[in-house]
Length: 165
Image 1: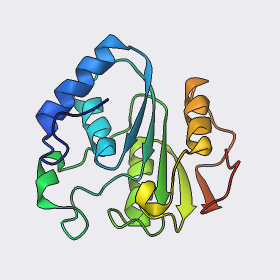
Image 2: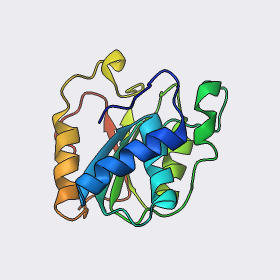
Image 3: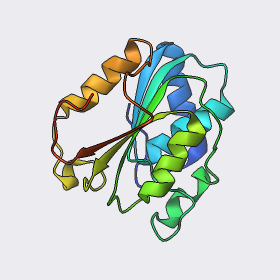
Image 4: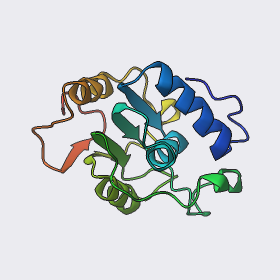
């Protein structure tokens, strides 16, 4: 989904837009990147009535760390650290400029999510060298099948590795 204003993110209008989309597609698997991960965590608290089938949360931005994220994301802080009521997987990188690997792992633990650690993968976006991401699609399919993963809580893979799911 497209948010109305990517350059001036505000939690309330973003949450309203996501809630509307989820009301139209109950049980959807949500794929979020960066600030979108914070939005999904907030939605679990703000709208527990929404039926979310699962969430793939890629490169969550640490909205509480002003050394890593800009002031314009302040409406997303504090980040809810409660167990998400739907299956979820967090994918983090050891050199993401927007979150330390320790905080990304802590988010996954607090949210009750599986954690996949992509070593040295930056912010896991186009600027970090990612294009089409078949492993991301596999993670979404895993969530769609019920969210169960045969992998342990923490899985570490080298950047550029394939078939890690």
